[in-house]
Image 1 (cartoon, rainbow, N blue to C red):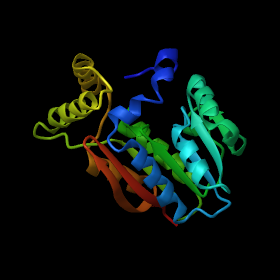
Image 2: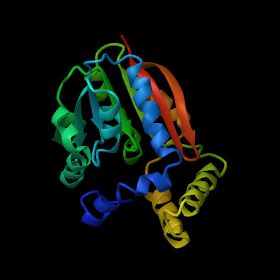
Image 3: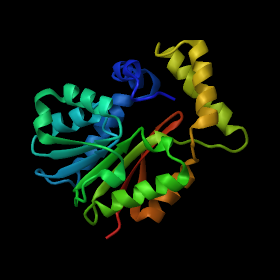
Image 4: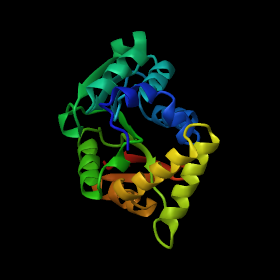
Amino acid sequence: MPSFSDPQAVARYATGPVRQVPGFHAMQQMASLLLAETVPQDGHVMVLGAGGGLELKVFADAHAGWRFTGVDPSAEMLALAKETLGSLAARVDLVEGYIDTAPAGPFDGATCLLTLHFLPAEERLHTLKELARRLKPGAPLIVAHHSFPLADGGKARWLERYAAFAVASGGISAADARNAVAAIGSRLPVIAPEHDVALLQEAGFDNIELFYAAFTFKGWIAYKRA
């Protein structure tokens, strides 16, 4: 797994996800459209795992009246986010830390993209509960990350598909793909989609809907229970 305090990993971040996450740009655009269904024109949105600034820029470009709080544990990635945002950074507060460091809100919506798969289930549940606590009742949360069937050989099968996509997209060599699969398989605490949905429900979210499914990646929209 990449170290987001490694300058080389940070420098590669802008191009890496595009080649390793099927439909990466479309997923961000869909997240923007889903948020806009309920976030008001002058809304305040939290982006957890905001380092790099890619989704922040998509959201800020599309919604001129929104303000943002971006939270990320990596100072280097937040610096990249500020650079990516350019003049849009004036509408974004960047906070170094984790969910417990985030402002109390309440926010009109939140996203957590390509982040939760780094957290074991217990920490993931804590993060989701803290996100819910910072949202207004009925506010949307959008999450997307590695989430795929694990039983009956599913883990190996889906990781092989993930690697095949990365190689076919030119984002990684076959040898590096094998190393990535080994690292994800042994170190990334991936859980099955039904477990992800159960954690969202336990954390205080209802009306959970799948909006994105691309090989090993899944994305859901959910709304804070009133």
